[in-house]
Amino acid sequence: MAFIVKKNIHGKEYFYLNENKRVDGKVKTKTLAYLGKTRKDAEKKAKEILKEEGNKEEKKAPVPVKMKQEEIPIEDMAIFCKRKGFVYPSAEIYGGFAGFWDFGHLGVELKNNVKKQWWNYHVRQREDIVGIDGAIITNPEVWKASGHVDSFNDVLVFCKRCKKPDKVDKHEIGKVKCSCGGEFDWDNVKEIEQMFKTEVGLDSHGYLRPETAQLIFTNFKSVQDNARLKLPFGIAQIGKAFRNEIAPREFLFRSREFEQMELQYFVDLNKINDCPYYDKIKNYKIKILTAIAQEKEETVGVLTINEMLKNKIFKNKWHAYWLYNSYKWFLELGINEKKMRLREHKKDELSHYADSAIDIEYEFPFGWQELFGSHDRTDYDLSQHEKFSKKDLKIFDEETKKKVLPRVIESSFGVERAFLVFMFDSYSKNQKGETVLCLHPKLAPIKAAVFPIVKKPEFEKIAEKIVKDLNKEWNIIYDKSGSIGRRYARNDEIGTPFCITIDGESIKKKDVTIRDRDTTKQIRVKTSELKNILRQLIEREIEFEKSGKPFK
Ligand code: GAP
Image (cartoon, rainbow, N blue to C red):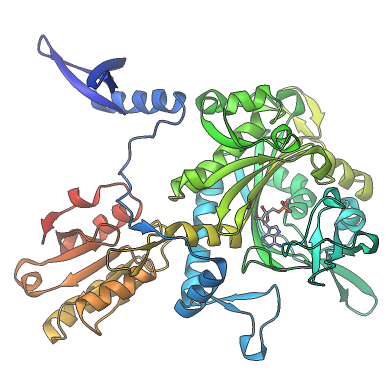
């Protein structure tokens, strides 16, 4: 672990980056770099060096010790989500509808927070990316041009033993078995169109979009022009997608209506390796199941981003960068890296639009499965839309004075799969065996619960005032029923990271206690500073125990 030290030499201050290493049972300190004469410079330089060094963490507030993470089957997660108001089978009073789900009062908050975090990271915090919100049903020519009308089919097959229908990928025909262990009837396979078709007006038809990406391609030229974007740049979109899945299963994992958060990043093919961020990320190591390993039935290895590029898993630096950036998004929101890995698509499973594809997989209770997909889409989509629309979609590059049809790197996130991963990854038990949902505070549906320690008007008045003030920024609840222990447990179970209590001291000293969900530790802070401290705690910018006076 590297750290900054200040040395005083002849009355002047100098900053260095040191590292402690255990050698033959003894801790030895090694100086890694000189960082300058001010702490500000030192912190900036250290950050750069540590980023360059690969997986070493940036200096930020440490994640509080988690409760013990608990594995639960997907069926139990669905029951938990329903019981707590996260997710319900759609129209359950009518028996539900396979592949469709409704989000409850907590589910909608978590889902909105996932989308907000994604948008902040991919759009708000970047100069080179803007967003759009396209139509769900659009001109059906779009889907002819994109290749979905011809190629977006599922293969339906029946199991000879359990007789159930199942979906297999084209490259799996003749090679896989049913989950019950039975053989599939390969003599009777059928292709089923995955897009939902619908009537439009009296004599027209349309499709519910199976991916959000195409609306980005059809609007690409106008957006570039109006937002005055210069290559390389990206267009992002969050919205519903629909697929007529033959076998919707594993709760939210494979549904017929879901949401995607997609980013299409446009790069001049001649500058596909001019990625200014690459050197900082190239030494980062990630677990990967390569196409070769899958063919040889070998297991997962660990490669640096640069090794992946050299092995042509990524064909270019921009693709490598975007994959890393997406992976990092999950890590920054607290996902356990041990449960994540990459998987390279084999040649025979590539989508019709992709030249190369790498998924981020997560170890769900039902095995390693795709959480996110990244594709090098080349200029396939833009060329197809040029051909079908007969419009010139090339853009003028001021620098080279040439017209270019850019290459596209796609990062595609499923909102519901991310939602599931955040739920599984945070599902924990405390020492009493009670459920604690250790969600990152940025994602938690409710940021804080405010309690008067007892039901007395003088405490309630303060509590109500605090709730009213904090509610302007976050989803805060006022909870005054039951014992304090019961109120903590109730909030732990739904992932509320902080509980704020008003007690006798609060009236005298104008302060409150804050309890941290993951460590159960408490601090006292001035009521006047509460909002500011809470903001920093939600952002994990400060350490909990250093944010106020320890309180027992
Ligand atoms: N635009 C590219 C595209 O749609 P994809 O791999 O078919 O690529 C991208 O889908 C992501 O959308 C997946 O990684 C997954 O998170 C999500 N997704 C796809 N099908 C889904 C389904 N039936 N139910 C829930 N999420 C799904």
